Image (cartoon, rainbow over all chains, first blue to last red; front, side):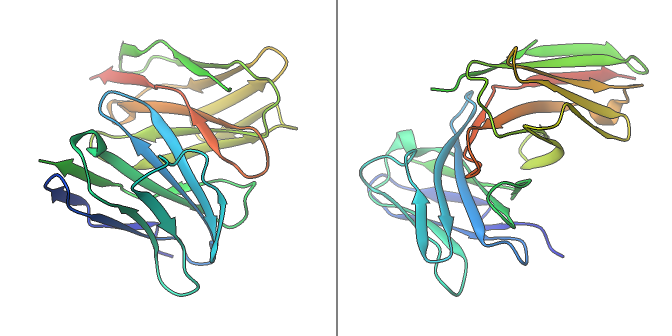
Length: 113
Length: 112
């Protein structure tokens, strides 16, 4: 059973471009969480999704950020019109049910030039 | 809002020592507490999950305890090894949605 997969592992974008980060949860896991780790800071919750539903997006910036977890395919975190402050490591986690152990992917390190 | 604090921020010990990492949280109404390790430039590896009804969990040389009433958890590492060098993170969730609040971590260096 492969672990949580994230791609790309590293992403470089220029200011104003769009960034799309993908997360494939572990097999059998239908709950996906996105976290952001800014340089020299701890991980911060962004959004919690189940298949086709956003359950809690209280940690998402109000503008430019969106997330989805379609019926088929990976979960996508989309950042429009990136700015330098978006440079961070973005981690995805999955779990088989919402109250059990979370398993993390290796992260996507976004650099905005 | 839940605040999670980890002390110390960094720790350097010689190989073979037993050590304790501390985690405290401001809101004792937690659902789960999970300990992770993070290696430089890598993702998080789950170590132990303690549910709110439990007081401790053990896995190999690791033992984690939870005292909800005082808002504390400790991670005990026995007979430390250089391979244990990493940043250890504590995270707590408030309800069964498992939205985790993370501490800033303890960076552990085990010297050969």
